[in-house]
Amino acid sequence: MGDRANVIVVRENGTHELYRTGWAVGVDLDLLDGPAAALAMLPELRHCAAVFELIRAAWPGWEVRRLYDGAAELRRYVGLDPEYVRCRNSDLSLAPFLAPEDEDLTGPDPGGVVVTVGTDRCHVASPCFDHPVREGVSLLDRLADAPRHGVCSLHVSSGIHLDPERRRMVWWSLYSSPQAYQVPELWPGWTVEFWQDNWERHVTACGRFSPAPFDAGEATASVLANAAERRAARAGHRARTKHRCGHPNRH
Image 1 (tube, helix red, strand yellow):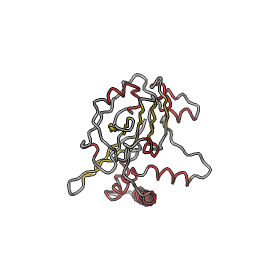
Image 2 (cartoon, helix red, strand yellow):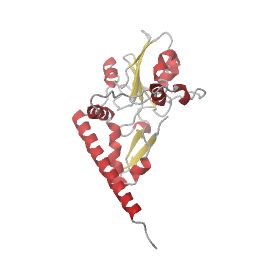
Image 3 (cartoon, one colour):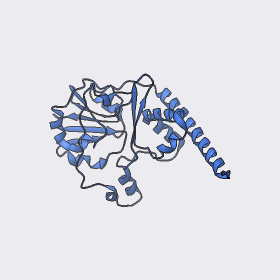
Image 4 (cartoon, helix red, strand yellow):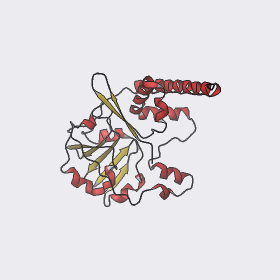
């Protein structure tokens, strides 16, 4: 479950940027504040880590964590049946592997799933399908003909590292993935680890994933500035709505 949206921003020079969000509920209301507010909102999608740390700081004494199993995990937390929100009979939607020059990988933050094998192979899958980790060991067969990337420097949203010799698979994700905690069942005979959102461990696990560096302080400042603009824009919208409701047109 989720409110997903793809947003493409076409600049005046013809270049475009692609943004993806899993929290697009109310995006129609965000657009009411005009292009300046909407464009200011989009870069927030780049700073997931900074946002999460700021939320933790704003809620001292509270447990703040991601629900990697999505709505099912939320239902389990409150004592409801998590299976109620699962699609048990749906077929797996295989994510295609993308070539380095694929247009889906353009833009500052294209997303995607980086898959590294040992220390000598790197592939990138589309993020718009089921997570490749759900394919189990059959994923190895698909990787045999997948386009290679050398070293992935993209800011992806998820990753997998495979060590076939040791039969070890580790993965991480910035977003929820259905049945995230049941993944080991799909890899019988393999050691499976879930690194949650810790993509830095993937960087050190091999030499094939090295995302472009970013300034953590700049990311935090950007998130705070965008949050302030968003609050101001929504406050202005509420004020205008209240004014219109309180002074209906009379004819």
